[in-house]
Length: 381
Ligand SMILES: [Zn+2]
Ligand SMILES: [Zn+2]
Image (cartoon, rainbow, N blue to C red; front, side, top):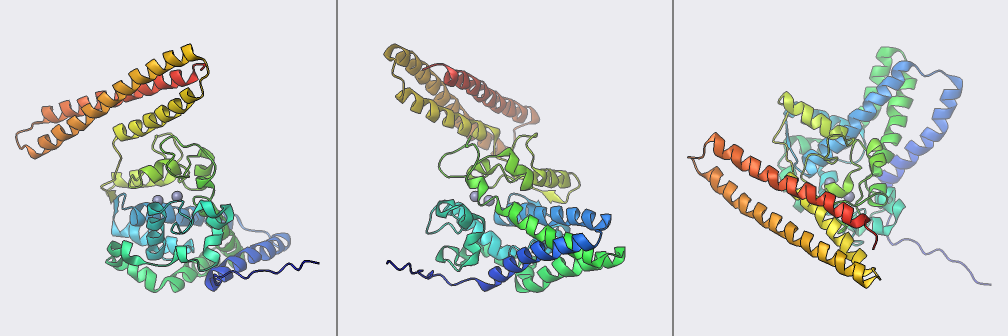
């Protein structure tokens, strides 16, 4: 008879994370149903749960992620303070650790040895497994976060993280609950349930958003765009766009794409709380999408078995590719001219608006070409 022996993992358990995840999950699965069975939750508890869910979720996506990890915009101290407090409520580690790790994720995305939450090591690993043990891929190294180490608010939170996180997770719901006359209801809904739900919503960005969805901008990594995931991740479901254009303050780049983090940042800029919002030029976005279409059509031509049909399609493909290259060249030239114009003190308003118009025409020409390419892709091979 063969003996099955379990090989112990060479990586020690990360006890603070194990305790936090097991206590919150077991607590939710036992205390919550028992309380729901024996008591009534007040409406205030559910409202506070929803408000805290969004406050802590947006503090991770708008604060930890887009502000501190990617520097996609600048924020007034009051908003940074809000993000710092409610980000701690999300219990996903300090800003410094989170942002440093996330920068490593972007740098080494999908690399099984260096990406801390590489999807190539499995769905569960990318979702939560990477935090359960001390893996070398998640080793702390703040050499990529020196800017954050200069930030007093970030360092204050890092130093007193546990106290702030416990106060925000237990102290604040208990205090608001006491004011509304429902301490336990608030602790269970706005504290425990909100914490576990927010954990898994945001963890989906590392797992499902690298697994399921379309890749309209790049196939160089596993990141996907998925409208459904965006609904649960405060707008971070447009992860394919994000991995190509990580410093853009938007993830859902189209106005209609569900990205409440983008809407929050943009609307706060109208009252001066956020500023210097970074946007990728529309031309670069169109160019990336067209490049994907060319690659897809090229692969399709390789499978075409009808020689006469192949010759026609090949000809159309070459013609479109030529036109694409000349538009890209014209745009590069225009960028040089634009730089020159910015340096020149003589340039007047008219010169600037004329330049914007020429750029717009080039963007339009790529948009039209994308439509032609779509039609070409649908033609029978
Ligand atoms: Zn990612
Ligand atoms: Zn990112």
